[in-house]
Image (tube, rainbow, N blue to C red; front, side, top):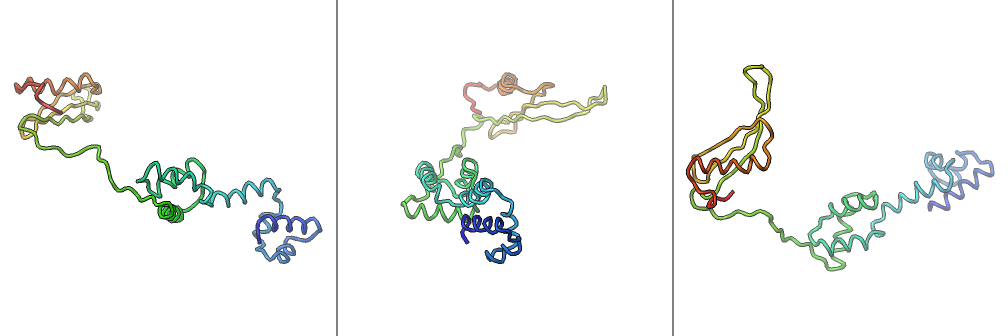
Length: 199
């Protein structure tokens, strides 16, 4: 039975003096379903029951989904579902969304883009000593005078194709000034020119 006609018929029978059990038998609905609607006013019925049906209908959001598919050809159905939940509070399964998106792609000839643009790529090996890896870290050590633990910060540098390693310890967190100066200190120690070395 459709939702609104069932609701109105239920309340008509209730106003005529039928009991819950009699109303459920007459309308041929489950007693628990009928009990749920028994004391519900029309506004609450529309907000909770009918709105739940609207939230499950992906066809209502077809235009929005098509715009997303055209604007972002590589978007996945999972991402579409996340955006729908975020912006429209939908309550659909991932499988339903996947099928709906697949049907839209076929219907509107919107192939999924599989070209991945890499932000970082491997580069050719530079000449020896021309590249340096810089790492920043921290460690807790025990102070021998006070026997308390103290946090120390370290900036470590390693030259490419080299066994040379260098580190500098700080008692305060390393910031751009201290961390940026550390590679220069290493190069001065090992006699290299900073302008020809990349990080």
